[in-house]
Length: 184
Image (cartoon, rainbow, N blue to C red; front, top):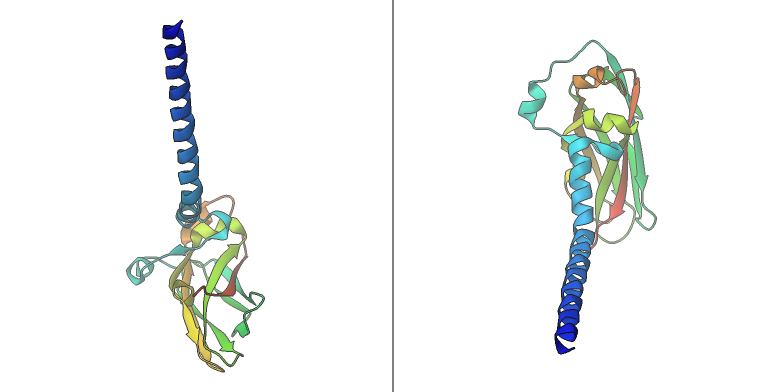
């Protein structure tokens, strides 16, 4: 009888250890989910996440004759007393051509505020082909009271887009930014 009780206790401890290990693993995956999702989106362009490119990578890209229109959208999160807008709403170019667009941001408050822009492109499937070489969204932006700044975005659309059946006929891509107040 004592051997049976000991065997049952040993089995219960094993099940408890497995359950505790699974619970800790799930907790770890919960904390890792956001950075893993961000890395996945950046690598694949999923959900309209754009790609980053160096100036050297961009210089190796040959522009095509195929026209593309880029539409710019600018938003400010509720509670951020900034004005934020593109200098031009659309920009025409060719796929593979490096372009520069400018946005302006103004702090309408009487206190310094740090903001950070989040971005995406639509249609979502074009995110894998939209490459930013330089962007204000890569850094936090600190604006003093009443300060207005002009911020550039240098980009190109990868000609590989023309080889993808899901994107080859897309005539326009929208690059959208939303400025949020940065946490202290």
